[in-house]
Image 1 (cartoon, rainbow, N blue to C red):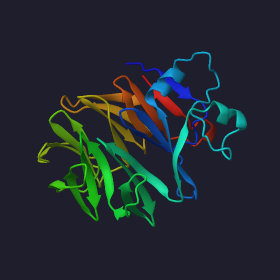
Image 2 (image 1 turned 60 degrees about the vertical axis):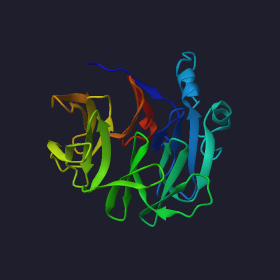
Image 3 (image 1 turned 120 degrees about the vertical axis):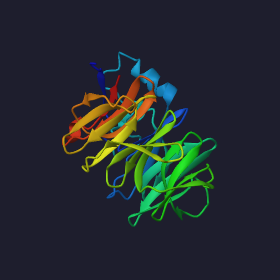
Image 4 (image 1 turned 90 degrees about the horizontal axis):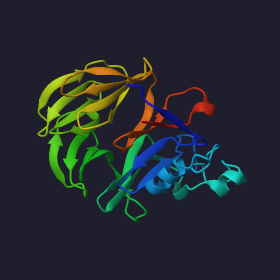
Length: 264
């Protein structure tokens, strides 16, 4: 299937993409930055800007910081800065009525409620599964509720989890990808290649597996085991905006082309 790709101008500053029901969040975090920003735009505003066909040099996602963007870009951007800090922003999660932000500090991940006076705790949120969380504390992994109350210990060392129907797809720390049931009992190996990769949810039967070494991303049907090439590039970030649209950041050595892409 041939897919359409749209490049969004003035987005090379974006390093991470997060999503909730109403908003899209971006960070410019870099391990060398002393000023890291969490920014946002509403989904409605985002889609309205994309539908404006007259806007050729799009600035609606330009960085709102005058040190990074020109005055003209700042006057046209619809992105707002929500939070600035000296630490690398590793994750931003919204689960029901709670927002969590995570930082990398001295090579460890610390988390707290967003804009709260709570102390940072050494805890990494791997992902949100419906209204629950998959977290890592020290070297242990757990399924918890939104307040970190443990529901179940997970006996896999993992880097990512995707829920597909009545199963979880798990990417393990050794890069193996497996399928387990909702009790985390092993069902089958999906991919045993040990090269660096990333997995992304696509729909109720398919995931994306993106391989760094071969610079290729495949679409894989979890149940039929059929696969095909989705993109001839490695996707550093990919998040489903709606059922037909992915927001992606490709791996590129050319800074000028390091823009957000929409894939339909």
